[in-house]
Length: 364
Ligand SMILES: [Mn+2]
View (cartoon, protein in one colour):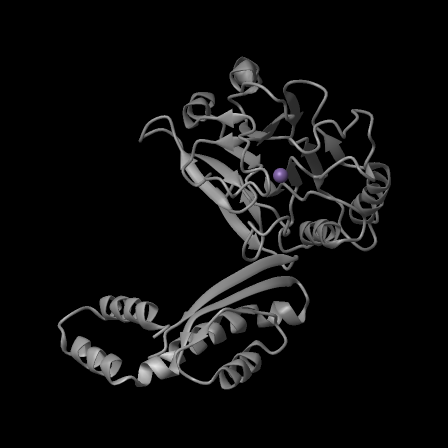
């Protein structure tokens, strides 16, 4: 079975960047290249209940466009959705979002069977994962590949705070690796951790089968914690393949550049490198860029700004640099620098010392 897995789209209103991201995902699911059977959305499809009525109507149209119009696309995949902590109250078991779109909710544990795969969904609840462990044990079948859909926090070190969008304070539905090992599902298709794509194996013992915990990260920028291009996860259960699909959806990227007065070119080069990486997406208007420039410069401010403007070509930046030409020309500073250069020290150490001296003497 071929699956594309996503979560945390946080839809707000029809036709914004998040909504466009969902359309982008459905397009990806419809292309022959992937030929998928299933799209899984593990929670937080909706952001909040504001405008939910219009949103559901728009969503139904969108799903219909990709799942029902046989002439344009090949609507042969199913969509499975579980509620997350943002949208746990926003579903009604009677909601109809289109053909082959199914909500796994209404019970503590929901089962959807395919030929050789069993999907078990846990709709989000504010409680203890232990309370559903025995249901999940019962739901597992040996004759099939077992896949768990859950919106949760896991005890992996990758799950540090800041990665949950704007809800870093809360640890929703904490699950431990021991619990997952005990349950022994082949794949856990998770959601909730926005910032990073995580694929992590876990197993009962070194010689037992390898299971996978997969968290795709948000497929679109929700907050500035989600940095870099967004991804989906492609899973092929027969080929045992797990692969990120890099998306052209709206994302956020940032850089901080510290200028050193005695090697200005390095700073310009770093900025150029960053701008080159995001330039294409900037032109396509799919990236929000934040550039912070700080440190000390040894060329006149006007010249510096001209150079930065030329590199950034329209991208906005924050310039907090301080010009220290006078200090650089002071005989004492020159002498200190010469002496430092003669020392047998690693270059980065010399930089650190010089920075410290510039910092200490900048006002003299
Ligand atoms: Mn979320």
